[in-house]
Length: 170
Image (cartoon, rainbow, N blue to C red; front, top):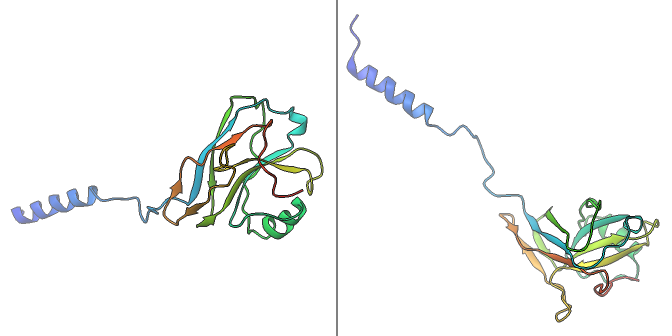
C-alpha cells in the first residue's frame, strides 16, 4: 500500500494546527466593573458589640436625606444605591487593613462611603465612618465613573473613629 507524501504532510500539519488551538471558548475579555481598594483603620476600633455591620455603599447622587431610613427605602432597597454584604469584623484593630472588591454596574458614583451599624435598630443605627476622597483638608467626596470595561483601583477608605466625616443623615 502506497501512501502519498502530500497526504501525510497535510495530515501532520492539520494535527499541529488543531493541537495549537485555543480551547478557552468565548472568553469575556472585559473584567466585571468594580471598585478595588483598601479600608485602613487609623484609630482604635470600637468593641465588637458596637460593630453590628459594616458595608460599603456607592451612590450615584449625594444622599442628603433626613434619616437613614429614607436612604434605605428610597435608595438601597430600590437598588439605586448599591451596597456590599457585611464585611468581616472579627478582630479589627487600629492599623488593620481590609482589601475589597465591590462589583458595580457601570455609571458615575458621586458618594462612596463606608457605613457602620452601631446598634440593634437596622433602620436607624447607622453612621458614615469614611468617605472616598474626603480628608481633613478636603472634606468633599470624590466621584468616580465606572465603565463596562474595567475596574477602578485605589478606592481607599480611611477610618478614624475619633474624627468621623460629616453625616449625610441624622
